[in-house]
Length: 399
Image (cartoon, rainbow, N blue to C red; front, top):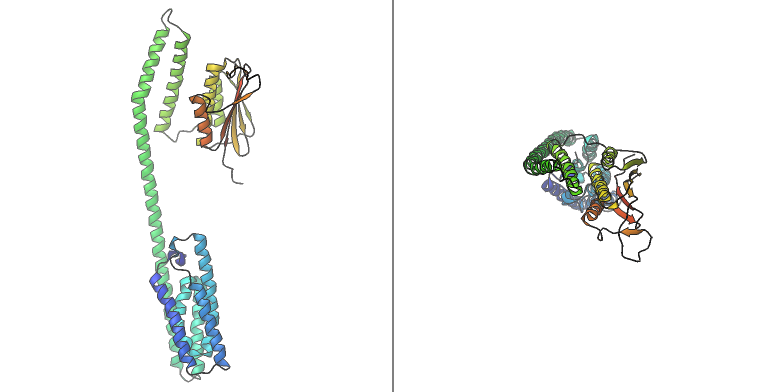
């Protein structure tokens, strides 16, 4: 558990940092008031300065890290670890040469455990205790075992107590994390249940309104078509359009009420559309599964292009080509019909048709492609057909 990232004890951390600085200064005043700066005294000054500087580098600029990113937190933790290890490395020979600095062991002990974890923290704690005991042993010339053994066993008790406290805090944090994850899962389940209920409500409303009215209109047209002399091309087209719309609406209702229903592949869906429109269909590239939003958009684009070809092109042949690129999916709808009508003087050169110059259907096709980061192009030659080409990027599959 990254205790640094959690910042569970900011007040204690501040007290430890201020305590180390205060103890280091007080111990230095006490020591150098009794010793000169020659020899051992000079070495003690260098070691004390190194310990203080290393500790300062470790803790300066680490306040309020809750709002920082994980990479910044890891960098700060690494800096604290290195700084405290250097501070400990300076302090260990210092306390042996000058036992007066042994009081800094309390703050240094907590600082080490704040950053380091596990066996490394325990080992450094043991070294700190041994260093204090060694310094006191040398200072007493081995005549006062109580002065030596007291800090030794006291340090062992403190190490055990801190380890137990750290385990308890870690277990508590793990429990909190588990509870938060459980609550998030429960919230997600509730959202899914609410979404499913809303889908069923919308499906019921569509069934009771749109489907019923469409079925009624279709029935009236079917009955009208049976009367002699009442058959017309417009009535036939309206009847076919209503029949297709009714089938699609019922499929939509089935998907709303059961979102888990398996959806055919994009190739299968486009092949069915082409067959229904009397068009040819082919595939280029290696077929693969396409994400639902891209597949849905491509189906609607092809459907609109086929509808336009049937209504306006008067072409004897329409061809749909589905192309699987490495990082995209493309569809070409080609007819050999009349093409777009242009102003006189346009000539026989193929002209690109923009979405703005087209009708609502062309604008809708372009919008579907561009919304997903793709594009739609239309080229037409008067009297020589039209090519509608849509291409939409697909996420790259992980290697």
